[in-house]
Length: 256
Ligand code: NAP
Image 1: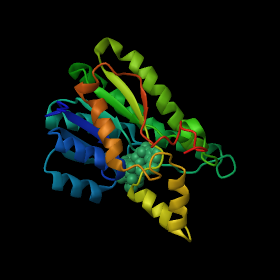
Image 2: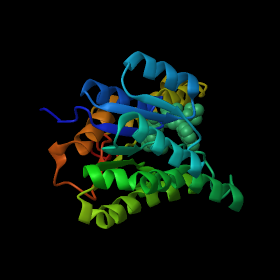
Image 3: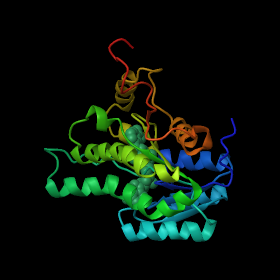
Image 4: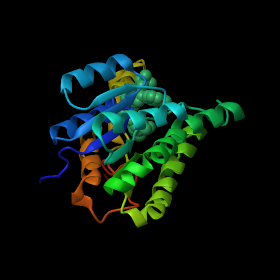
């Protein structure tokens, strides 16, 4: 299937590593022009050098002015913006017992503030190109996880904003969708598994909970769905939440 993404300029937040990196690599493979926004300068520069297409912009996404500057820089370097993937996020475990009001608010800002900053500043470009927005959520916002109020509240807001922006941007044919992962094998995830006394046993506990093939989702499997939602192949799909999670959220795990 030709996704018709050739020469599309797409911003990917948190694009230097993990799921974002897989999205960036997928875009480059399709002939698109990925623009990586990330605070990991070394990883972003290395990826950008390797791909030899698009750009890397180092920034802290929590800085609204830096987000505006990144949008302006993208337009001045590449001439337009066809897509924004709001991907950066971090499960920071600010819960009822492990956090406090100040930490809760900071976690909310860190995990959803820049989704708004990016769309707010890129909106004029997206209207001009009839572009597409993809927001990365988390299954925790619909299942709960415990001990992570800030992250879960922010990811719930991400899903609500997906619907809200899909409505607000209808007049300009800008589509807005969300992809919702559960357990994805990123370097961060590998490090987390490695932090347990018996990593193999912990990994087995986690994969046993995934109904489809009892395995972790690969970042490329998230990326492929994101590319589809960015592309003209999903031209009448908007306001949707696509769970790419091996059935983790919805299938009856008691019988799988
Ligand atoms: P990751 O491996 O940690 O990669 C995220 C990248 O974003 C990192 O390079 C990180 O830099 C960067 N970043 C984070 N906050 C930033 C900020 N404020 N400014 C600039 N850069 C920032 O994460 P991932 O596992 O691929 O997760 C990507 C998305 O998927 C997140 O929204 C996450 O919540 C969601 N998700 C992941 C899983 C999973 O199992 N992996 C499951 C459900 C949902 P640093 O490394 O320097 O912080």
